[in-house]
Image (cartoon, rainbow, N blue to C red):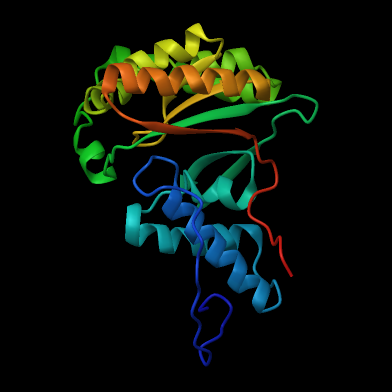
Length: 243
């Protein structure tokens, strides 16, 4: 409202969230993005895309910290590289239109609070692991721009810093990742802070089959029930869908 220079209007919003809380799927960012775009729509759509990201960042900061990892792609769609915050510099990474990309999201009935999962991270990083992860980040960007789903899956499955610390806190996650790969996924990792596991594939029907193997692995190795969704890459971002 401040960014729109509106100070004389009270506003109450009601959100119907389609994401579970504490799941590693960026539910707080989705709420922030939806609210920012809804208010902007109500008052003449005067804010730019970058303005909407900034507005969403302000909301996200109160819940999950000042980071655009989730709000930027929620607003802009597709993949977004955050180059810097001061000044805010966002780079859209265009996944080729002729290529298909699906995410298999399997969420166990288990909460992994972001604060707890962040506390598990190392305070210092060895040079070898730092170099390795930087290389995988570069490989991930290249895979996105080329539409190389196999390379994308390999890169996101190669973390040596964050996932090794968080995986022990999520029952059965290693077995879930193994099950996904054996069922044909190109890669599998922890989504956000967890506990959701995300696998990548280029075919929706194969994705549903992979999801069943992952659900079974959570039950067999983590004693956790889980639910799954197979979703296509959203290239558009948040938008008005009802009049």
